[in-house]
Amino acid sequence: MPRFFIAIVISLLLGHMPARAEDNMVVDMSKLTCLELNRLGFQDFAGITMWMSGYYNAGVRNTTIDLDRFAQAAKIVKDHCTTTPRATVMSAAEKALGIKMPRGR
Image (cartoon, rainbow, N blue to C red; front, top):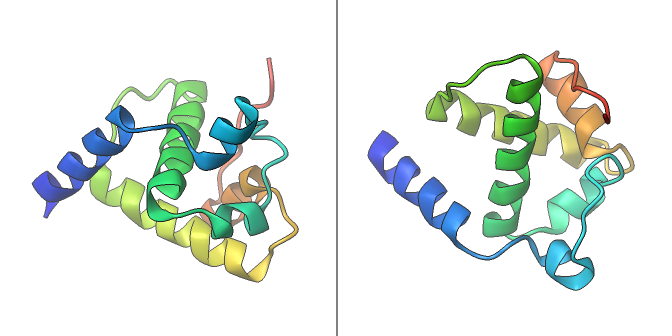
């Protein structure tokens, strides 16, 4: 299972950017809502959650990734977003995962 997930993550990273980014060329992650996240397909959702994981982990100076924990966290955030469509994805991640996201620099 972990090797399969790693292969998916690598293919996602080498694939295209999220659809919204293709339309606008820029995604303001501080404004992305749960409703918008829930409308994304798997590949776009995975790209967004991978970015969020990297953003958070860079803020706490963590350079490792546990792909099983990443997948669990992504599911927790997606489930939380289902019940709070107007929330931003970043605030939903904070609440659902009990973390504090770094703020803009």
